[in-house]
Picture 1 (tube, rainbow, N blue to C red):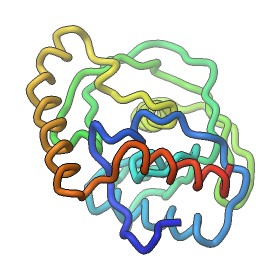
Picture 2: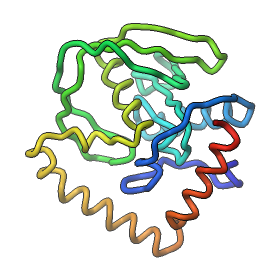
Picture 3: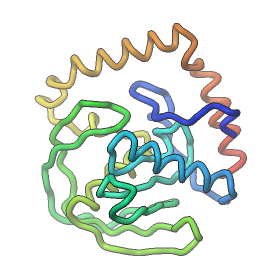
Length: 198
C-alpha cells in the first residue's frame, strides 16, 4: 500500500488533510505496521497525537500518547471513534504536526464522551477531560477534514495568515519539483486504500 515510499507527515495544504476519512473495516499486519510507524513519526516530531490523514491515509484512526515520549505514558489507538455528550467550554492553545510551528487559541468542549475500538477490536467507552479530551477532539477533526486553523477566532486567523501563505508556497514548490503527486494521483491512491480497508 505504501509502494515502498517511507511514510511522512504531510503538511498543509496537502489534499488528504481535507479528505473525510472512511471507517476501518479490517485490520491486517500491514495496518499494524503503519500504526507503529505513526507512533514513531509522532515521537520524532514531538507530538502527542497523529491522525491517519496526516500520513496520507483516508481511514478513521488516530494514535495518541499525551506524554509525547515512547518510554512514558500510554500508547492509545482509536479506530472508528465517535464523540458525544460535549460539556463545558475551554480555550487553550493548539498546534498541529501538519502546520509546524503555528499555534493558536481554540475553544472546545471541556469534557467529551468517546466510543472507539482498539487495535485488538475491543470496544471502549470513556468520558475524557483535560489534555486528553482536547487531543482526541483535535485528532477527530482531522478525520473529518477539519484543521485547528478552521476553529481560530477572526483575530487568530489574521495572525496565522502569513504562516498559511508560507505553507502554501512551500507546498507549491515541492509539487513543482515532483515531490508531491497531483491531486488526481492522490485521489486515486486514497480510493485504492479505501477499497482495501474500508
